[in-house]
Length: 118
View (cartoon, rainbow, N blue to C red):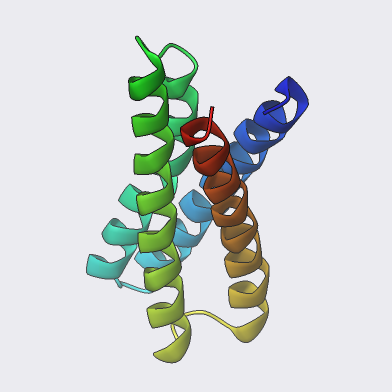
């Protein structure tokens, strides 16, 4: 994978973490603490794992970090859908946040597949 793509994934996952933190703050203000904590943990973990991969100790570790990021992004997508279906977040917030989440998931799938096929 090109360095440009890796940089784009790191930036998108960082921007996504910021959106998730702001969403979590909004949920906390509405006194929704359980789901808020779940989405905060998984949503910020995506970017943290992408960043950790930068200093992976081996190719297998590198793949592992991106695979964990993918799992966390998938979990975050679950929480976003749940929050939307239970009307904790608006359709607009869901569309914007889930859209970015799905973009990151696609990038992570591509990254993991590319790395495994090297």
